[in-house]
Length: 78
Image 1 (tube, rainbow, N blue to C red):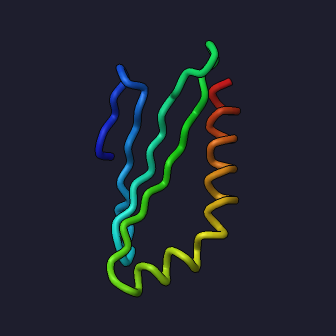
Image 2: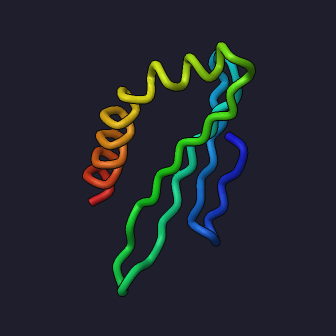
């Protein structure tokens, strides 16, 4: 974990697994029109050509993994 900021409703996680680059996952609660929403952002900084190949090869899977992750977190907290 890099940061947990209750005041700003933000959690920033660092991926400690072996990757050809660095990765972070951020969760933030944002308010819009009086309602709270979970904003989830995945960031990857590739290292060299291998990092770029890795990122683009797993990119389609991220839509399923991260979408399901956010839905499960919201469902669990409701």
